Image (tube, rainbow, N blue to C red; front, side, top):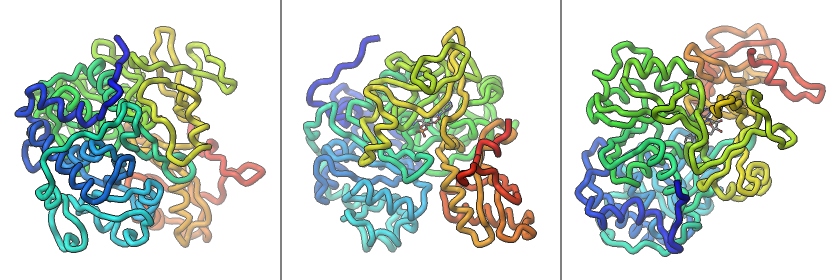
Length: 519
Ligand code: 3UK
């Protein structure tokens, strides 16, 4: 398949939005959210109004706009509206805590924050402290907070409905996505205008075979790189329809969307597939009778889940590995070539290699460090020179994953080379959970490792040393779980707590987490 070429002047908003009007698809449904359907023509106007409104607030080319938004029609409107004026949307995880948001606002230097009003309480205390922030725009119900801040609905109504795209190049910075590491704060992965179309063609079109007739639903939210491709750029690349659901993805909310909107493509993470399958009532009849393919990413999909899903829902789950740095899936199973328990083979357009510690290729059957090269790799981490040098080596990106390639060329996940955990497809740093635990007055120290649950999916487990060891009890374990839930994003809390007298340490006092992992 030929490599994509781009004109020298290129703005991704024109490709994903305006092109549909020029090509006669303005009346087609782009989005279905709980408020109803939005056509491509209506969405294009909303994008233009959002761009004009942001410009009216003083946003200029290359300046960042932080988006903390639940899924719905305004997500793509603000995302593309920001890019259309040449500014840089930075969608962030809606599950974080005030302390995280304070960092993201300052690190990105966003001038404007576009915020779902239900998330306002997480920001209220810190808004005065953000050094660069000038405006907050609330999205959703107008309520008592509306007096203090602008409201997107009112701004859109007042804004002009037409907007010429800023003359960006394919190599202009288009958007950032933050990615967590094992130490320190999240890093802003800087992506370019061309990257969205690259992933939409290489994976959306050529692997999923997405067409204008598809109706897609991603349980993974749009602020993740995974959800952004799944539910925004892949469908908008071909003029398909995307279903958005602002609520947390639970088996019940997901099954209801499957039943009511009957999507043809569904994207989830392994934990969600496992929890849907745990209820025998859930199947193709109570779900979507139009489902033709499903996708799993974020962490490895256990073989049994894929096989069971196929029997129950009549559609394959294509497991594929992607990353925030590469924007979307670069190695994947394919329809007609599914090997459950593996991540399949490289997506054409990407190259991968497995190397040893000296950088030499490892033979098939042995595990090595996975590196990837392709046209959607972020250009750097914002203002993080050393972390960028550690990860990006010329055109190659070090993923931090270990993999084994078999003689037929299929790749099987073999763990991380750092201590990072994937929990429900989302990064969790053991250090962060340990710090939250040690902030509790009863805790002397703690070590957190991954532990597989009954579905073979990893969740955090904590080994805790108490200041007064005889206080150990199931009630204290529950109290510690609640304590962490109150301080960190909810998915990060330890599902198991084991009280121990001491932690295994090196001579220099570093916790030896590997000794606490099983197997
Ligand atoms: C792990 C997997 C085994 C792996 C992502 C699809 O997950 C995404 O991005 P993140 O930056 O995390 C990347 C890391 O997650 N991983 C992802 N998928 C798999 N491990 N099998 C898999 N199928 O450690 C990788 O380095 O949060 C996924 C599309 C876009 C994405 N950003």
